[in-house]
Length: 119
Length: 213
Image (cartoon, rainbow over all chains, first blue to last red; front, side):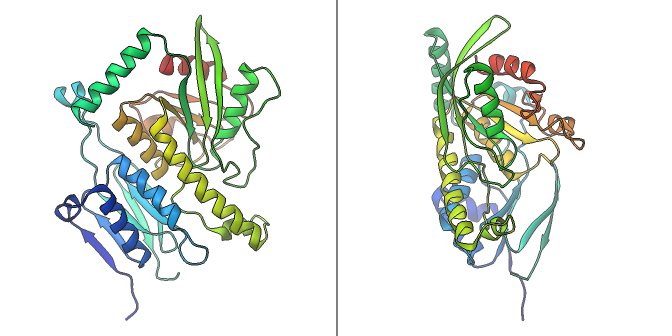
């Protein structure tokens, strides 16, 4: 059966990993052709590291990079949150191979993506 | 960011203000073709006063493949003088496909070379995030602002507690809608400009002095 594997990764699984471990896990899985939906996304520094490491992994005709989408963070509107400039934790993130995942629309609260089997 | 790190950043800012640190290092970030190099060149033309440019501009993405730094750009606006070191960074992207360059008329060999250089440029741009005092984030005001690159750069500046100025570029184009950018990221100052035509640059310099001065 030909298809696309979609892995829904729980917050519990991802939070057990160190930052580099998370990034390495994501790149390894995406290079296998999987689409990952992370219940809790990466923090901004991890996202930047993921971009950096993705660039190192790009190979012509083999791997052209990733499509990654997460929502903008919600600022904590509470008094304590404002005082400490506390960010709410990252929300859901979708990551997949650039040649199979395409973002159709994205706004503050919606990510609409097209998943294609053709490589 | 934990409390100790936040305290260190705040202390560093107070220390710098007390001792009038010169040349805060400001990175110009954004996706490919947003107009980062055009804006950098405009800043140099306006304040360095020579034919000096930061880099060449092309409609083909990833024309800038190495970060370029210009130290000591002095900007005077509304009685305030600030001195900045400006870093024009390669466009950030999560994917680079050499076929895209072939579609622009490049040969197979040339496209693969450009692709390799572009990936190195993105790595360099990401590394620069650790060494900056603030960021000018250039967005194309004819495009949807909710790109992952924008979200990641803004998230990094917020997590590091560093100042950010959003530039809604290309307002000379008929499809430009800088209001959408303001609506998307209301927590940060935004200036609508056309770096190519020089529109809105006075407001940009005022915002620059206010944000990084």
